[in-house]
Length: 118
Image (cartoon, rainbow, N blue to C red; front, side, top):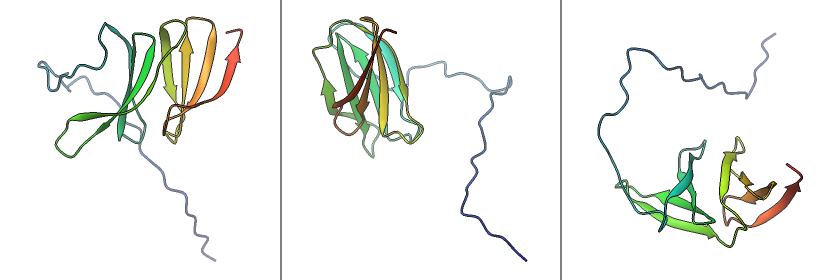
């Protein structure tokens, strides 16, 4: 009897000492007017999230490699300390220096939940 499964396995990427890190700038764009705090690529690889100036911005990469602003979450009380994607890239956890973690949708950066006391 043969049992089939729809589970797909993805091989984990491992760094090799023989690989070289890039030694030149490939792409540069102005994401924030002052310095940036965090940068995170989505696990699906289709967009980039940046933080700085008490804002979080999502950027979508077009077919020629330019980044276009998709959405912006502004008015944060303090700067962002860290960001982390959910595995399916649908939600983003944003750790703000006000000891709160905001869970937002990556589609529109709308806050769905706030975790306080962290």
